[in-house]
Length: 158
Image 1 (cartoon, rainbow, N blue to C red):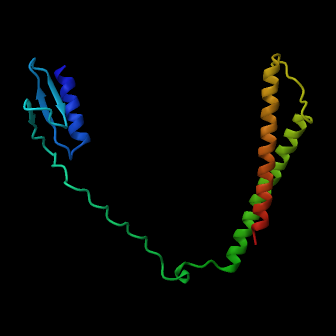
Image 2: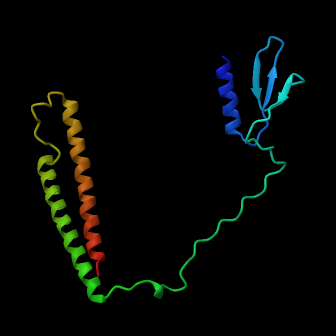
Image 3: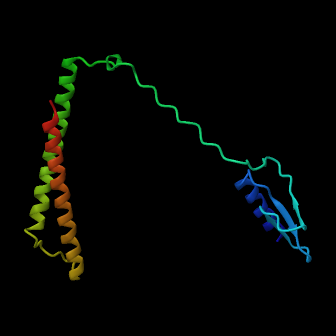
C-alpha cells in the first residue's frame, strides 16, 4: 500500500513539475498525496526538481520563419539535354507501368465476366461468392483509376 501511494506521489510530481504537492495524514494514519491543501493536517513536500507554479502564463515566443533563398537562380540548374533524358526515362517507366496495369485490368475484367464470374469449388456458401465478386469489382475500379492516373502523368511529361 505504501509503495502504491509513493508511486502515485512520484507520478504526480513528475507529471506536474510546476504544481505543489501536499501530504495529508488523517486521524487513522492514512496518507494521501494531493496538489491541493485539504486542511491543517497537510504538509507541503519539498520535492527535488519541482518549481513553484507561475503566477500567470506568458504567451509562447513567436515561431521563427524558415529562411527562403533570395532568388530561384541560386538553385542548381539541370542541362536541357539532361532533363530531356530524365523525361524520356520517366516516360518509359510510366509507359511500362501503364502496360502492366492495363494487362492486369484485362485479366480482372475477364475473371469478372460481366458481373457473373464462375463459382469456385471452395465457394459453396453464396456469401463467399458475393464477397469475391465485390472484391473483383473493387479491384477493377482501382485498376481503372490507376490507368487514368498513369495516362494523366504521361501526358504531363514535356
